[in-house]
Image (cartoon, rainbow, N blue to C red; front, top):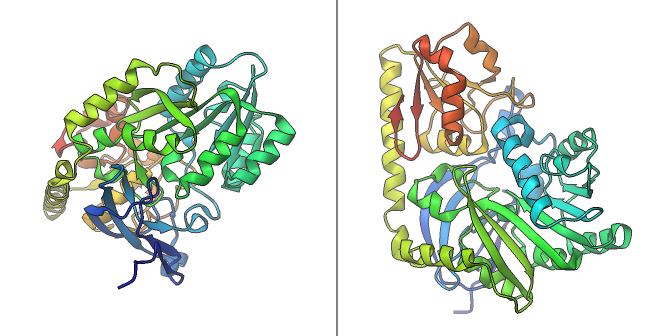
Length: 421
């Protein structure tokens, strides 16, 4: 029998299934988590367009060669990011504060006056808006409506997906960049070789590539299965990233854990220099090895852990509904839709979901078709139980909603384990 093809196309369903690792190109791939078939998590819809909704396999694999954890079923970028993209980073106050602090870190550690900072997947300018007053900034954002929101803040933004060709054109027009950032987007990229080549083309000799992504160690230890969705193609630890950048004459020289999105990793990369790496790289690699992230055995019980959370949530919420209790949900983040669909929840289980994002209000959650409404409804209505989908902002939300809780509403926290507060 001949070798299997590297990619199996499904033109009808607008996705491909890959048979090779996107970092090392190896085929030693083992499925470690299966969540079923899901629609793209940011494709909120209305009643008129429900018949057009598509679902795609959502399975996670471990590479035995470079140890990258990844999705192999790749939904097209056009399907994920077409039309009116509903995610605006600045809708989250904690996230705004995070990127304000992040910008301060870059200014203090990496930048001088008139340096160029490029942000790949810049969304509504949430990072660059804090740097634009002092440095030259340029965003790259594939969703036209989100890019326009950034421009209204005074952040120059290019529409489109980042490529080597785009990088070359940017260098011709703007010069080399001292910092290239890719936050909560580097893990979204299928063709990593193209992006790394483009970054290398764009960086100055002393430039730094900085990325933030969900951190695999936090995902596993806290059972954060809902952070798995089609946009998130990779779940990074340090070792696979070292393997990736080494192939392009680059090196990971500093890393840090960041308490955002349920636990993230910030990675600093430069052209290979022969200079010593920061001690943080050695420390985090040792921690990952001790935690077993480089072995398949570490993931053997993850599917069962996830199913335990699902079964508890379903039993709890449907039990409350049988008692006549009103149950709703709080926040409509991308990860919330993974959880809703994996649990099989519908409007019969959750009356509505509240969210502050204007582009989501009035629509239905993808797959589960639960109405998204303004949080203003909670001023006049007090649900008995509220499923906190935005659990990563648990402390912020519980403090914010003290008055609602004083009226008797209880929050159901799904991650890392089901509890009621």
